[in-house]
Length: 209
Image 1 (tube, rainbow, N blue to C red):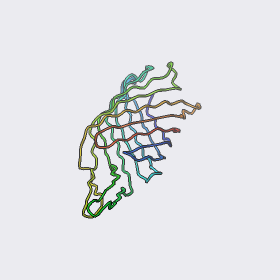
Image 2: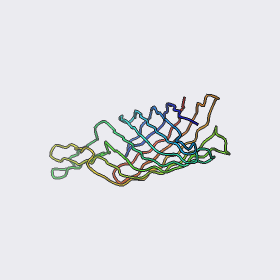
Image 3: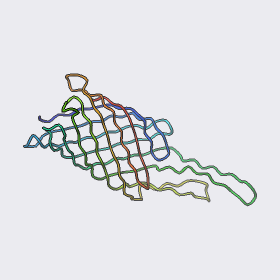
Image 4: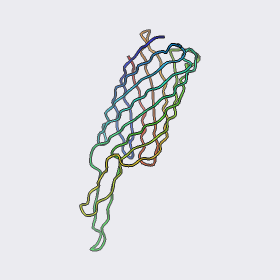
């Protein structure tokens, strides 16, 4: 099959912690074969801007091996990383209910998260038709994230910089369909990461050239 690559654009909805965003992004993929054409490699990366309720960035990378490339169902195993950074100030409201009572209402959202680990999945050509493909992957590893604390002296929320580590699990799914004989694809995708420190989820639509 040889080496080949493509680039794509995508848009959709994302949620990081308790914040909702719109998402606009770019992606790139490079695939190739080893000496055995039934086994190959895949390198991919993506970057996106998060807009709407505040703003931020999300980026990811993957490097892995694909097995069974000549079959209707292929399997993949590799290393993945996903980074999210949400900008903007957290909210802190202070109310004096009486001379002796002060109420603090804080919106402490995660600011940064770097998730890295293993990804295992499969890709299926629907009805063995190479023009229609469904992919599903499971991920797991370490979530390196920031923590936040309330400073009562200054009435501020102080965020650390990627100082905590928790395990995470995640999943990624995609349906892609070729739209012409040039191999260009329309696809629908989603991914979700869950951990005690931070969560991230998204759903979107994209086009690969």
